[in-house]
Image (cartoon, rainbow, N blue to C red; front, top):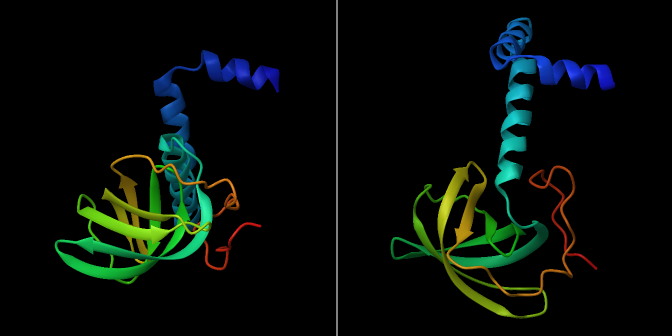
Length: 152
């Protein structure tokens, strides 16, 4: 194991890139897609500054002056994922209104940072001070169906 770490440190970036490409060229499409998903998820997780928590609660949001309803899938002090068929585009400004488990009402503005088929992620303009400690940390695959629940 230590020898492998030593080899990694001594390998040049171009050599490592060449070896990586060589391995990728031998993979099937499914393996390549799995690898891409793994790498993108790892990079996305590095950007996150605060932990996400599972939470399923209704949220009302306004984009471009129009109100919509969706459901919070997970939340942190810095952002939220809204599950809705009315997906907002990345870069859109948004105003959200929802309640935390203890009944604390939150009204906050933010920016949509990414959209996907089932909903979108929002980065809040300021951190929320609500008590999220009662919520359950998400499982390894927090956005998989069936994993939404309130913590006890």
